[in-house]
Image (tube, rainbow, N blue to C red; front, side, top):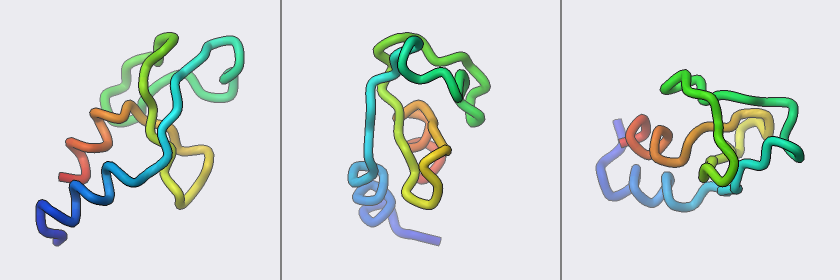
Length: 64
């Protein structure tokens, strides 16, 4: 298990994007909270696979 400080650093260091429903058609929902993405939602892209998109707040809560 990772300590809180390390988890925070990981959560804050990953790539983030703003969701755009016209540009981002290959994914539509966060698999953590199961909610559909809305335009301008802040998403986190995990480095292990550029096809893993989540709400930034969901990833932070999940990691921590």
